[in-house]
Every structure is written in C-alpha cells, then in structure tokens.
Image 1 (cartoon, rainbow, N blue to C red):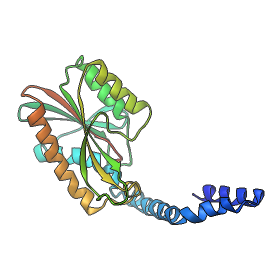
Image 2 (cartoon, helix red, strand yellow):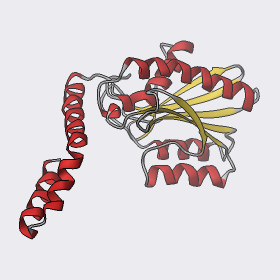
Image 3 (cartoon, rainbow, N blue to C red):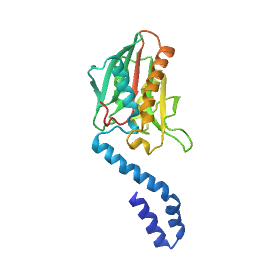
Image 4 (cartoon, rainbow, N blue to C red):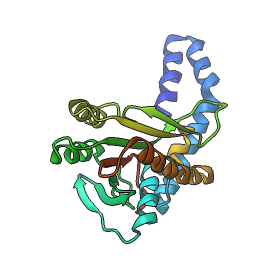
Amino acid sequence: IYRIVRHYFIMGRKTQNFYYIFQVQMVLPEIMKIAKAYHTSVDAFRRGTPIGDGLGPLVVARFVSEYNPNLEAEEIAENISLYRVTYEGRNVLLVKAKGPGGEVGKPGDAIKRLIEMRSGAISRIIMVDAGGKLEGEPTAEITEYVGAAIGDPGPEKYKIEEVATKYQIPIDSIVVKMDPLDAIAIMKKEISLAADSVVDRIKRILEERTHEGDTVIVAGIGNSIGIR
C-alpha cells in the first residue's frame, strides 16, 4: 500500500501533474480500508483465529464432524487433508487444506490424484469457496455456480478443470459472498453461520444429483488458519 501511494506521489511531483495526486486522494478511503483489513489480519494469524477465506475448510470440517468427529485425515497432496465419509450410500471424499496452520495447499493436485486413482470413476465434484461481493450485496449470501470455484487463476484451477473435462465429470460450486477485505480478517459470525447452510446444500446436491454407490469429491477451498 505504501509503495503504491508513494508511486503516485512521486509521479505527481516529477511530472508536476496534480491529477496523479488527485487519484490517490479519490481512492484514499478505500486505501485506508484495505490497510485496516491487513492490520486486522495480522492479529488473526498471530492468534490462529479463522479468517473469512477459511469458509471452505470450515464447511468440510463441520461435515466431517457431523458424521465421524474422530475421523483421521490422510495427506493426499501437499498440505491437503483427505477425509472419507459415507452419506446416504454415497462415498464422499472431502478435501481441505491441512489445519490449523495457515495453509491453502494444492487442491488441484489432490483432486486430480483422486480422480486418476479411480480412472475417472467420480460422479461429481462439489467445490466450496469464499467469493467477493459488490457493495450493496449482503455478506454471507450463498450462491451456486457450475465450474471450478477457486480464487487461484493459474495451475490449481487449470488442473481441476482439465481432469474434470477429460473424464466428463460435472462440477458444482457453492460460493459464500463476502467483502474481499472480510476474506483476510477474523471470520464474521454471519460467515461462520453460513457454513452450516452450505453443509445442507451439499447434502441436497448429493441427494438430488447423485445416486447410491456414487463417489463424490467435496473440496473446501481456502486458508485453514484456526481450522482443524
């Protein structure tokens, strides 16, 4: 933040163009908002408190604790935990970043490995992630999409979509909307409560779009700080 503000200040001084300074002045409230969010996030990571971006891992943790709270995790990829749960006759493979440290892991590697281990015999992929909201939209609004829900614009998203396309596996995504600054701050109460609603939506998708005996991957995308 400091470097960006300094950049426009120096450019304005060097070029004697006050419009550079105006740009900073116009967005200064947003800059201060971002600075405050980063300051808050430092405290969250220092204390090991869940942040908004931990919504995905929190959903997986709650799903697992509901059916087998003592279930031991397997490490299926770098810093990615795998849990095997049976729900209404479906074999559910749940993956999330290893916690409670601040990890995001490599979910793309985990999903690709699980699919290729079964030669593509996966009926569906359900992904859960935090998503940005616009001003005026309610915090913790839940929306459903088709396709991979993951903030990573590069290799992890590519790996998931590549292997899903190869084996013709449909992807459902559940996104909980929040201010991008809430994603790095201590998790708000409404976001935590939304995790329970997301678990219910996952159950509905399993019941309505899969059959008994199917194997389904549920991926909770996000930072696992404070979430086991």
